[in-house]
Length: 288
Image (cartoon, rainbow, N blue to C red; front, side):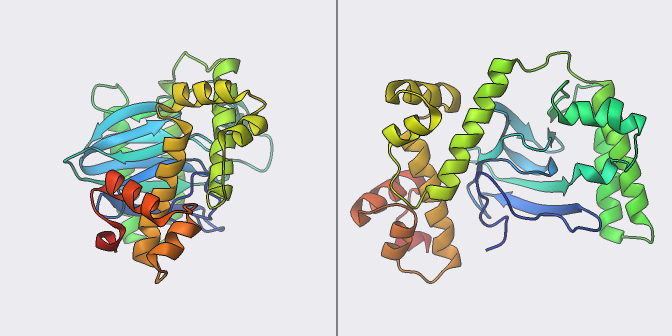
């Protein structure tokens, strides 16, 4: 499977080539997948909505999105993409490593603006939509970058770099005054740890007491913490992750349904079948 056929909650795949770390992907929900689970990675990402509508979350803030909306996701930030029931959505992912913009020597652009932004010393607007003063300018930049990537004239990489610098200029010039508190940052870091553990161990038995111990919480505090920040119980979240993994394996492997259930952490096949139909409205066999 490619990285966009199965996205890990904590992604560690290489999305961008080394010599010029910039890449784009086109995706469709629910045609390609019903949702992109909460995850994070080291690249910066622009999520550009092309058609339809859906929802995108960035650092647990959920945004209703439609055509020509743009989401800015800085490296290391949690984000997810979800289907809006009854709607389809086509979107483009633009991924790039921010090292593309850093000088190898001391540089005012890096030291005064880019590094403090990436270190969280100030924040920028995540949700770029009509009504914001910078919206039209940022949308135009994205369209220019897409056009360059399609035609790839000689030296287009130089122009792409220039547009990325302009993008960050517009974001920083229109930045938020609000800076996340230490408490908010601790919550996000704890959630990143929990999500990373699920991604690595979802095929194994995972219990609430086990997770509580890993987080230095009591079981009751862990359950309250997770539900308050994620909106669902830990067991619901874990089952949804496993079911999403199973659905993608059904279409991308020749394993039996029993083998897929077991590889995704379900020991009981009838329980797996029941949960699968509750989530997707069809049986695993129909999904295959």
